[in-house]
Length: 226
Image (cartoon, rainbow, N blue to C red; front, side, top):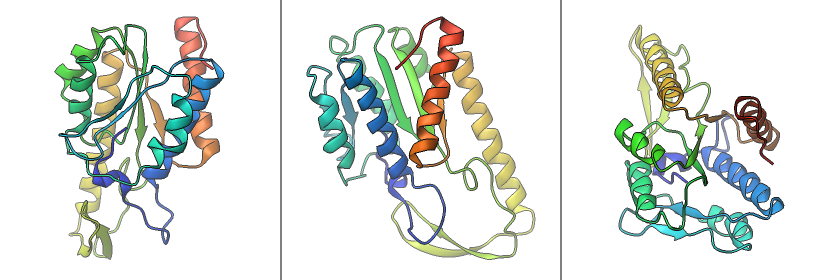
């Protein structure tokens, strides 16, 4: 789970995506599915920093409960910018706990994705990698036309500042954001990785996205997921 400070930004006063809530809902549904299938579920984040990875290997049938009730509720979001790269490197050192064929759900906005060579390396371990891409549909997948309007923007430190965009800047950002997302999805496709795309923290939306991913896998691979 990506716990960079940006993943915790949210305001109760605006209808934008609450990534933190989306991570929680997606993690709960995944853990519930594993428990129903009587499987083993592990958890990893670098919420406290690169020096203190929080790692719970998939070794207990009670771990899904701990993930739902404890790990996903942890309030700290101090992971470094390259947290996904560091987490994948960490798992490579614990391959006895994560054998070939393991489903590896990576929950993040992927605005700071690992380098391609990292993905290529972990794909070779024959993990079934599932990126869960959590992005705001207005501000990250696209960008609104707000040229000349003073808008409040929140930085990673949580501070709000007022910004007035120059003429044409909204369009530039929209094109850049759309290209960024398209490049991310194309990179996954080239690696044979099938992502789950989330643009809301609504439980029905998250469940529908996961079920849609499962149906697509069933058609593509001839096997289902519950």
